[in-house]
Amino acid sequence: MDRKFFEDMEARIPRGKVRTRFAPSPTGYMHVGNLRTALYTWCIARHAGGTFILRIEDTDQNRLVEGAVDVIYKTLRECGLDHDEGPDVGGPVAPYVQSERRNTYLPYAQLLVERGHAYYCFCEKSGSEEDAGFEHIEDPCRSLPPEEVQRRLDAGEPYVIRQKIPREGTTTFHDEIFGDITAPNADLDDQVLIKRDGLPTYNFANVIDDHLMGITHVVRGTEYLASAPKYNLLYEGLGWEIPRYVHCSPVMRDAHNKMSKRHGDPSYEDLIAEGYLTEAVVNYVALLGWSPKGEREIFSLPELAEAFDLSGISKSPAIFDKEKLTYFNAEYIKAMEPAAFAKAAEPWIRQAVKNPAYSTAAIAAILQQRTERLSDIPEKLDFFDTLPEYDTALFVHKKSKSTLETSRDMLRAAIDTLEALPEWTETTVHDSLVTLAEARGVKNALLMWPVRIAAAGKLVTPGGAVEICAILGREETLRRLRLGLEKLN
Ligand code: GLU
Image (cartoon, rainbow, N blue to C red; front, top):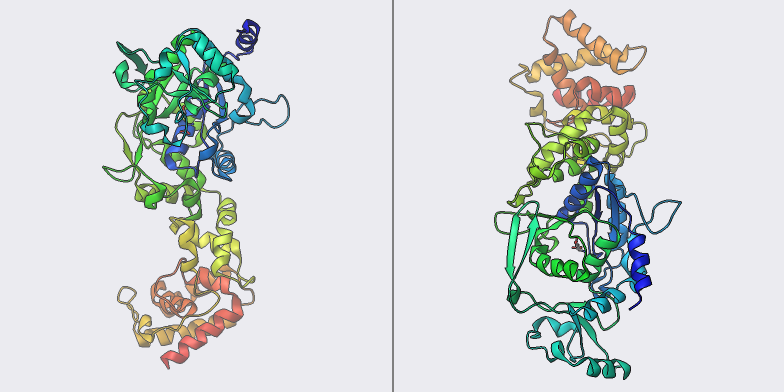
């Protein structure tokens, strides 16, 4: 064994009070659960002024999905979950990628063999696809004499390296959320550490890297709870300190099922495509399994980092509730700077409104306080480019006391007033109509109702008569009001 190699590696381990990592395997989309793990991991580091690392666990080449790494980078970048450290010094920080560290792991597996915590396995099926059903408890390779092992290695026989789990006894580990958990060793399998292709399994690379990267808190889903005893035995075999485990319960679609892409549950990207804002998604996802102290629910990312604490993480699974997310989204939209909202809404507005004369900013302004999701925008704006066919009955409205007669009368008066306007702005349109209502001794609503119906040709519109007329402009407004009047004559 090359002592120097291990000593050098130990000497290079970065130290810090709190060092966390998000360690995704690039096997698909960024699920809501993955995003939550990333977020909690980041918050734990940021809360403590520690270090957050991104590590791509891609040693299982069969499971790789093309483009998945890019989705991870893009999602983390958009969500503001920046990492601090990577293999390169200087320049933008690249993440750690396990396949680029492929030569790091084998020496540790060999060290474990030397210490009696792992063994070479030459069985034919070992480490192959069918490995799952293979019974290792009786694996003859567990007790091969060292000379035979050496002879077979020298002869170039293919092998895997397996962890040698004690047959007897129990293994106990501590989890920050679930407390002490004890597993009988007999229940643990001699998992493969190094595969036939010489690459580590992610279970093994994960442990080695957590140590070599000085990770203090391992944050991941409860699906890894069952593996934790095996990880512990590896740490013990290598004489390493065990990090703090933080296992988070899954995010569920309902009381019984985890969220899953297969069942049509949305990934982060899907939510964005559905018109949710990144900030709202991040805020909502943070509360799926973590409760802040107090009643407050709306948290920006820096506020989350500030407030985040392990004691708020729940043992029970959280249910993803789209309506709740929609509520958060609407709150975020309302609170946006008008210019920022206009920018976010623009592509959605332009899906429905092609006429460049109609100002995005003005349309955004009438939408902002009544939009729950950006994707709801286009259908609300269908009347701008083309006046819909509409029924004259729309001019009748109980609440404003509008009848066909009052509407005819009011429209005629509105047309006269608006035709005479020297300048066409929201203010001038507004003031002239209010003055008109006053002069006629009627309530504003009696005048505004038919104006809005004639301008939009539909019952429900974002914005009132004045705002819509201001956006449509003089010519188009008057054309529409005259058309309305014709219907009423
Ligand atoms: N690579 C594992 C995954 O993508 C994560 C393991 C861990 O965080 O420890 O699920």
